[in-house]
Length: 328
Image (cartoon, rainbow, N blue to C red; front, side, top):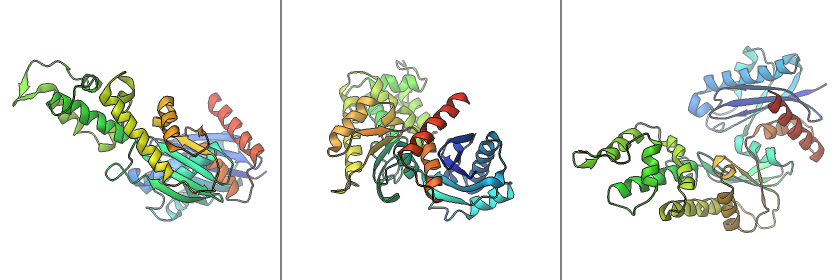
């Protein structure tokens, strides 16, 4: 029986699944960050190998029986071809040749077996995708916290911090985000003293936030949705929804129909916000939600090695991988 390996290598964790040609999950594996840009190629390769060998071991099979493999990850283009990964895999006892795929493509393929359609992912970053003929056809945004990712968790979190501190500093309108921000940071929201003419809480917040990595501002994004009725927070949320709608509209092509896939924590954890984005985006199908790219990585592993993935095989991938995860 031929077996295929799909790996969803993310910035936080790496997930691997071994599947048969009929879409049955045979084994799962998990390891640390597999992003070659943020973690380096050596570390990323080690994590992909560890997760892959776990999946093979869980299936009770010989690593040599794996007929093909796909690793879906962000930043693969930056580090060139897959030689860095294949060399580590072969040295580590997994004699299979990996193909690299975009993590966003795997996200789309986790929600649908269709060869064409659209995806919008808003997590820490934000990016939209158009798929045509089983290939990435066009993307919009996803250019990072410094230059883009508008409407993402980072972007929303940054607006929360800016608005909350501006209100405390007298530069912006009063907002419940100020107290929520200070409490989130573990700071006194009602300080009695000043530091060189500035509220101690504001200065402490500034010092703390500048010690974070910029992308960690995404941790503040939930505050925009949690403070209740607040004009400033509502404006931030509305601006984010409008920006994401603009991003997905940028990849829309007249005449190309297909499923719309929504992914990422900002969209999946905020259903009212996701509905707002959908309304603003206009002429798309209602979104199908997905949480990661593992099913898609397995689907791509089959497709890239000559196994067509129809609805029956896709449904089997989805249900058996979900069952294995629940049992793990």
